[in-house]
View 1: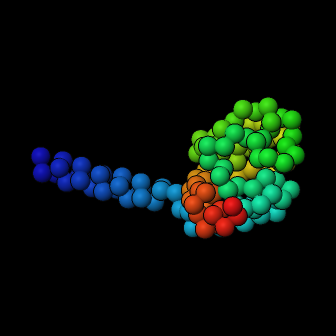
View 2: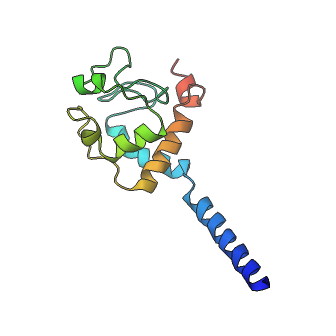
Length: 132
């Protein structure tokens, strides 16, 4: 019985360590975001729309930005799940999107990028607060 208890304790410790390792890393996500900077910025529109206020926003709804008809009609509301799907393969999720980037194939990179975006695009974040 003691051996079984020790084995269970070891398995729980390993499971907890794996969960900590798997937690999204916003610092690494900021490094992944560098790939996005060719077209996007947090606080202002570029080739792509700005990202401040992204979470909870309806896709294709930034005032004054010229979205593709496909994005305007997508009815996507940006959250962790929809961003993960879109970032994996933008053109598969929204056929006809003007975003011709192939996507972020690595699930860990996507999770880290989303963690960064969630923190950085909050309207109260320093980057977004000064753009208001």
